[in-house]
Image 1 (cartoon, helix red, strand yellow):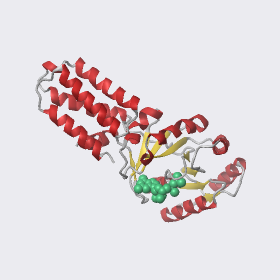
Image 2: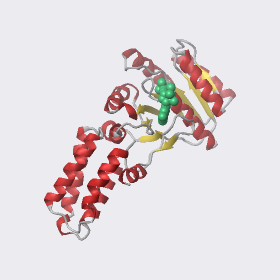
Image 3: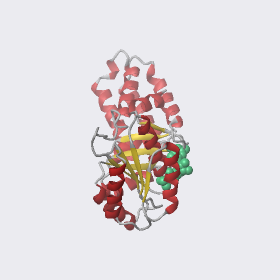
Length: 295
Ligand code: GDP
């Protein structure tokens, strides 16, 4: 996904990489080029501007014109700022040993919510966790069936809600199921819509209020660009998002949405979807991604 941006940044940095000293004008020109490359990759305007301002300030602070390995220092500053932009340290959702863990999956239809629910079940089952999946789309039986198929593939139980089932009924059926068959982690795949609408948000908020999730994971399709990030605010306002799953990082989008997501939403990116397969979910490592981008 980040190939074009990576190639561009590598070219820009290649030019200064071997310089033992850099004039202020050279630093400025490099920063302008980096800003252009970020914008061309569809990075959010404010995020790109901030990025360059921070690297510039540090470069000036380190008086690069006099430094022995000025070019290398710029490369390091760009790398470190990329890591920062992607969230710094790797973050993961909280899973309390022996505690109540209920994860709520939210997002627009087609973002990869149901697929990611199956992938999470697979990942945590491999770690020895007992999982219960809940297919909680009260309007689309096909969505519930899709999760049931995935649950069967992973080998975990699934509880399907009924058409129009009330949140309180869903909660008591989950409790009854857990009393019979305890689980370390309950993952609830909620309803998605093609666009955010008040009915969807009201329904999600009601279910969230009833189930009191310990994590609310917003699934975002990295292929849909900056627009994908606008939906985050709407979801956050109603159901308080705790972290993101960026899907389709294996696609050929320019990558700006994935790169800006952390800064624009203020939420950590927990996982990256990298294929359609059940095994295609990876923890999101900012330093590895920065390393990959800079080659
Ligand atoms: P939902 O409506 O949000 O539940 O979306 P789905 O889980 O049904 O996914 C929509 C489509 O995206 C399906 O064709 C998935 O196979 C595909 N998909 C989901 N995640 C990924 C991913 O990380 N990479 C790729 N290439 N495809 C994905």
